[in-house]
Length: 253
Length: 371
Image 1: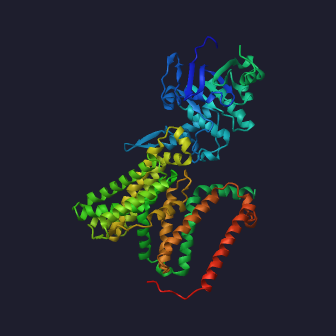
Image 2 (image 1 turned 90 degrees about the vertical axis):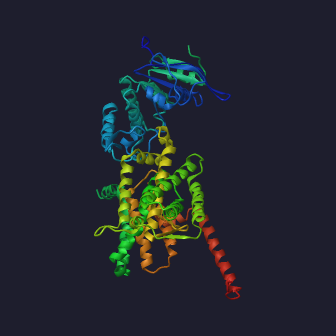
Image 3 (image 1 turned 45 degrees about the horizontal axis):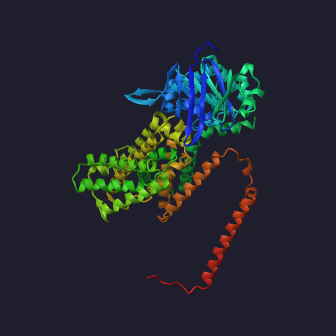
């Protein structure tokens, strides 16, 4: 792993909101085919860091490099165009639309009839079914039912399918994906994360659950008071050590 | 088995409830009228009147379906219809515009008023309820300023043809226009970005924003469509009566909103039923015609429309409620501590009313002629 080049390299990123320093000199490396977990207490700067990576915020200082090239993103859509997308905790689904419509929300497939673009519902439906099954191994009971009738895990799958449908997606940020799920669905979501890792995506997982983090991640970056408190390899670490870093009881080597 | 069968039936019926509701009410009206006044109600000429009345509201109900699906509301359409009708009338009668120019002009003006509504709501951030209510005053005011008390009458054939013409052996022209509007509306809803995003915006505005949908732009589109359809209604109204005045179309707003809501489109957004809106328009026209046929005073129409809105919104809200188990016993829900307090307040108010009435009658000095 050490000989591979990071796909994303954030270098001494600082973000200030007025007088408040939310992030101070934070580095972050993400490798393809690897799950990087970001943990930390509330207000430790996890969300701010991720919002900078996904183009929602712009850093006050510091740089973001992708494949060694410095990025200049001014919005979230810039990040999507570069292959960086996020699945939010709220999932951003429209409850009254069916899974296919949700998956393609904002980037619908169309076909031209008499020169006018019409939504191609049939194609979106078959594509949605294909992506859910082939890439995520999920089969929904009904593709016609509105999203509000799906279970939490299925909703999550639809939201992830929306992100991975873009063929050039390379970095996927997942914000608290298991926060609202039961044990079975959590297990299924963690499996999904592993499937995506096998496909060579760089996954950045934000989570409060150390169990989940230790179950799927390769490395763990601990944030504390707007700084990076340390990065550990999951296989060589323990929950005690990570917990110590989160609360500030131990300093990383 | 016996437990699952009705549940399965209800689940299968759920998507069609929007259309079953108004159809059931239409059937009830027809049944009632068949018992009470069959000869006059089911006469061909009366059915024609019902259809002509309904046709006037069809294009507006189509557009209002989009507006309400986006969690919006437009309370200015009556005034927009009156004002566009008057502007068109002036263009034809004062300035000699040919009718085939004046009609699309009316639609364009209506669309422009809709654009103003949309900009007031999305740019000035005035809540839609207040924004369109205020614009209703503005448009009505302009109509009064322009037309004074005049009734503009006698229009070219094209206009009357749009308002009350009839293709021999077939449907009246306005009905065809109304149905065409609904066909276009249904296609827009299912197969266009505008329809898809209208549902998404109404369903969850935050999600829609996060997926990159230009919420404000699609809201403006809906209000422009609404305005243009109100303009069309202005043309149809002018043609139907062969006359227009500034105080025309006073009850358009609530009538159209009632039709859409009765049809199952949710005021809370995200749930759109084009076919339901059509059924709602027909239902309201049949109901009002029934009141007329029964020789009930015109002013009761307003009472009936209001009651229908309240009942249908309450009914659909009740349908949406997932957990109905706790609400079984009416008496048990009335005796919760909160409801007891409300009941006491209600009881006190009724007692006060009774007391004041009794006092008034007791000290009455006989009727005083006014003036």
